[in-house]
Amino acid sequence: NQHLSDRINNMSTSATLAMAAKTRELRNEGKDIIGLSLGEPDFNIPDFIKDAAKQAIDDNYSSYSPVDGYADLKKAIANKFKRDNNLEYGLNQIVVSTGAKQSLANVAMCMLNQGDEVILPAPYWVSYSDIVKLAEGTPVEVPTSIDTDFKMTPEQLEAAITPKTKMLWFSSPCNPSGSVYSLAELEGLAEVLRKHPGIFVVSDEIYEHINFRGGHVSIAGIEGMYDRTITVNGVSKAFAMTGWRIGYLGAAAWIAKACTKFQGQMTSGANAIAQRATITALEAPLSKIQFMIDKFHERRDLILKLLGEIEGFSLNVPEGAFYVFPEISYFFGKTLNGVTINNASDFALYLLEHANVATVTGEAFGNPNCIRISYAASEDELKEAVKRIKEVL
Ligand code: PLP
Image (tube, rainbow, N blue to C red; front, side, top):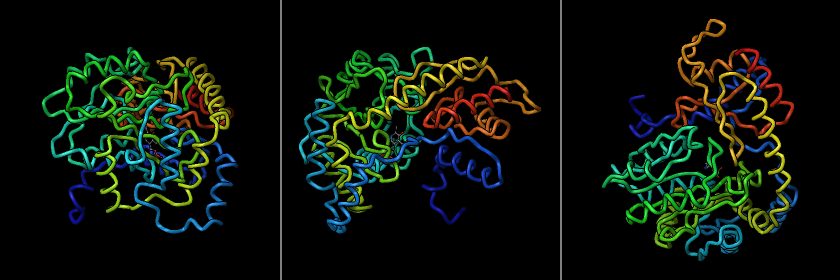
């Protein structure tokens, strides 16, 4: 539309949300679609967190909160960073936002000037690229493949750096590949970054607890990285609180201050009730959420086994998050039930229309040879979905 800004006209629609909309549309037509496209735990929020929210309503937490979050929530976040990541962040280094998504947007808007390059190891989370572009930055994709478990090597990082490189953004555990960077792998990246002191890092750790190998590592804890790493996290995934919209970051005080200034003009403090409930979530022992992690682990094993039986699916073993990211280029150029598959988008659409299974094309994540399948669904749904996929292939 010519009356809309270039900003919005040039932005792509979130592919995962678009797939969810298409799924809803087909369901409304009466089709029985199994939705494996969304990045959302299928568990209810644990009762002790719900109780905290109810209490917050009764306690009249109904006014604007401080822009950067309640002080006692920031204290709980500081304790969490210390407990889980051995990172020391003072309260002036923490900003609470409306989801990790807003934390990322704040950082982009505060750190990037036009033409600043942001290295995105691909596959990357779908929104990184558009958030960076919105802030007039230039995404620089570094393609990885299944051979390196979809992780960027130090050599690839070095080769991608130019005088315009301002930041590196990545997630570990990774959405969409489920890959988890080990300490040694992060040290390899840090060694390169130490040679380039002007490059900042966004470490998106929102899947931190959904980790089946154990031993989550925060890059901020590695020598030379603390001052220039923005550690982003939130409660959406580990606590199944996606709709409550609380995320946060820990960073150098001057970055946190800038993000608070920006957020103060955009949205103000995050939802007061959800902030209060987040204190309870973060202060609880991790044993309270272990049942969800165990379930995701079982389902990962199940879906890997089932998909492994389909010819043409190449799989890495995701060690975290709740996605598998099979390489399916084997099917390119083939015609199935009269439909020619030329790329991952054709493949995902074919699965939706012929198998009634919603997945997401890897193209949205910067990898044109894969699709993303979320296994945040019941075992029966996963079994039925793979059975249907097998039939139509
Ligand atoms: N980062 C990654 C890698 C994600 O997968 C998601 C959600 O899908 C987010 C950030 C956003 O999380 P939030 O719900 O806290 O905005």
